[in-house]
Length: 457
Ligand SMILES: *Cc1c(COP(=O)(O)O)cnc(C)c1O
Image (tube, rainbow, N blue to C red; front, side, top):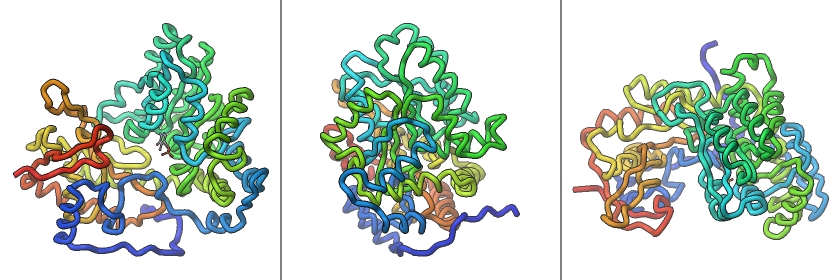
C-alpha cells in the first residue's frame, strides 16, 4: 500500500470552532495582529508549537488513574525511573516539571562567569540559563546547517573541526559540552550517530562531561535508522540506547518526545553532581521522587517514552512533515530542506519578495494564514530576532525570515494537513496583494510575545 495512515484511531474528540474570515479580521485587529494574543479557541488549526500540545493515548490516560501520589518513594516514580533508564542507561534519574528546570539545575551547578558551553545550536532556554549563570553559549553546527535550501541528511551535525579547535584552546574553561537532538533551533534537523560518537570522543579526550539535550531523541533515532548506513535493521530503542551510551547525562523536555503535556528530567552518571542536583531540586522543584510532577504525570510519561519509539508512530510522524514539505515545494514555495522532525519552516522572504525585512514579511504571512484560514503559525525572523540599532533606531534584520508550522503529536489528521497546504498555496497565489507591517509598540525584551503590530497603508 502506498497510502500511509495515522497509526491510531480516535476514541475521544475535541471540537474545533469554525469562524469566518470577517470574524477573524476583527479578532486579529483586537489582538494588535499578534497571534500570541489570540484565544486558542478562536483558532482552527494550531501549529504554534509541538511542545506539550500532543494527544495522550488510552494507555497513558489509563496509567493516570493508577498514579501513586505518595510524597516519597511513590510507585509511579520507580516506573518512570525504569522507563528512562531502559532507554538512556543513566544511573541517576531526576524528574523536573519541564526541560528548562533540568537546565537551570544543571547549569547552576556547573556554569560560572567566563566559562563556555558548546552545542550544535543552543535552544533559547538553554542559552538563557547558561548566560544567566554568567557563561557563554557557543553554537557550532556544520555550515550546511545554516543554508535553508541545501539538502543534507544530518544538517544538525556538530562541526567537529571547530569543536576540536575550541577544546584544544579553551578546554579548561568548558565545564560541560552538549549536543541537541534533533537540532530544534536549526529547523529540527537530525544529528548522525557517527557525529554523536565523534563529538563524544572529543569531549572525553579533554575530560569534558557530555550532556545530550534529548527533547526529540526518538525523532532523531528514526532519522538515523532511515538515513545512516548500518542502522536500517536496528530496533529504534537500540539506536536510542546507543546515542545515550556516548554521553554522561541528558536534559529532557518530556513535552516533546515524552508524549505528555507537562514534564521533564535530568539524567546523569556522576554521583556527586547528582547529589547536588537533588539538593537543588528539593529547593525549588520538590522531593526527588516527584520533582514538581504528580505521580500520575510520571505514570503517563513512563508509557509515553515507550510509545514514542514505536516504528509506525515515527514513520507517520516524520512522513507528515515531509509530505507537507513536498506539496509546498511542488507549488513553488521555498522551505527549509529537507523537512525536519517536528515542523515545516517557510521562507517568508522568498514568499513575499516585494516585502523587505524591515516590513516583517514573516509576520505578514502569519497574519494572512490566520485571517484567511484560521491557522496559527509563528514568525521566526526579524520580529523574534531583529535588533534595534541603539544609535539610529533602525531595525537590524534577522539573518532569515521564517514562518514555522510545528505539529502537535498525534493531534491532526491527513485532511487537516491537506487543508493547511491548500491555505498556504492560496495565500501564495495572492502574494502580490499583501502589504507589509510595522511594530507600533514593543516591550524591552522578548518582543515577539507581546508586541503590537499594524498593517502599512
Ligand atoms: C523545548 C526545549 C527545551 C526546553 O524545554 P521546556 O520543557 O520548554 O522547558 C530545551 N531544549 C530544546 C531543544 C527544546 O526543544
